[in-house]
Image 1 (cartoon, helix red, strand yellow):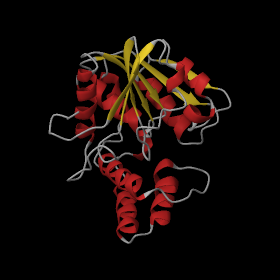
Image 2 (cartoon, one colour):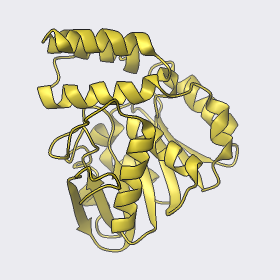
Image 3 (cartoon, helix red, strand yellow):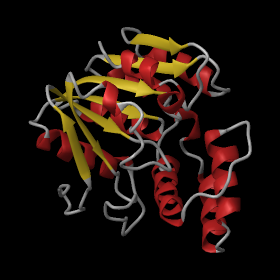
Length: 243
């Protein structure tokens, strides 16, 4: 399908029932939600798509902003019938917050899993990542992303070239974004905040700050899980989406 500016998005629809649109995080794609989808398709018509910059969707012809991601999400919601529950994981959760804040049109409920709000406005990480990628060092680029952006407390390997390009565009949007968590108080749609109990700082403090900004939001903490809960505990993750 096409977004408003003509960007082609690869989209998959599964199951039947109330529309549920899932927005993947960085280094993701059409398969990001595979562990969770079989647990949802009996009660939801699930929609997954590769965000712009991630194959097989179109790449970005300029620096990406969250407005681009919001336009793409809205296009998928329209394809789903104009209204849908929205679930965002990591960077995809920040996309959901932006869409809900802009006007919330078509979003019935929003579930956010650990949006990396602490990584906003970081132009230094963007410049370092772009330099490593331009130099052809995918391993260094991914380590910069892991250590300086996601703050993973572990070493990681190199991303695939197409994923690395998508991650660059995500960093462009993050660098141009505001770090003001209080602004999310303007969201008018029902929100659920989901996080892993063992995810490393600064994510827990960030989720607490988001909870202060959205005092009416429900919160779910997945025991024994971290930022990879959709893969390590898909049953518990799927259950958190049912509200």
